[in-house]
Image (tube, rainbow, N blue to C red; front, side, top):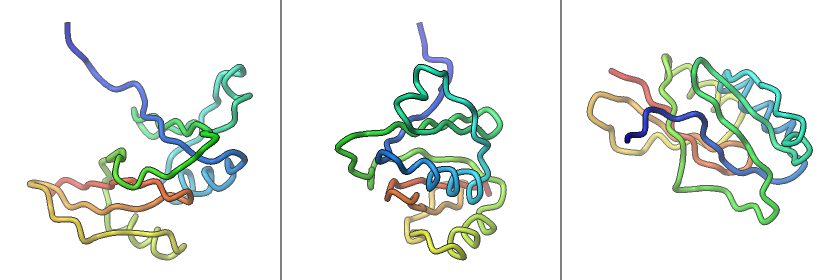
Length: 121
């Protein structure tokens, strides 16, 4: 018995902020929004996909941003994404030490959740 992959990653967001999520995850990070099943759509939040990566944002009543726990996404142009994030004024942290074989940066979504972006060298 073994784990063979990840179906999706879920992070939390505050209620009623779906437009902010869409603006960040589609316009900045390049995800495409995908429909949630009707029963789950009633709960709020939004689902996104890029290639074979799915990210689900679920509404959490007592929301607190994840400042340490985070997803890490592989990207093909880290410099372009950093520039885009800086241009629109989202928080970014490029001070993390490098990992062997990768360049990386942390950006923070509109709710303060930490997102790691990694590019292979």
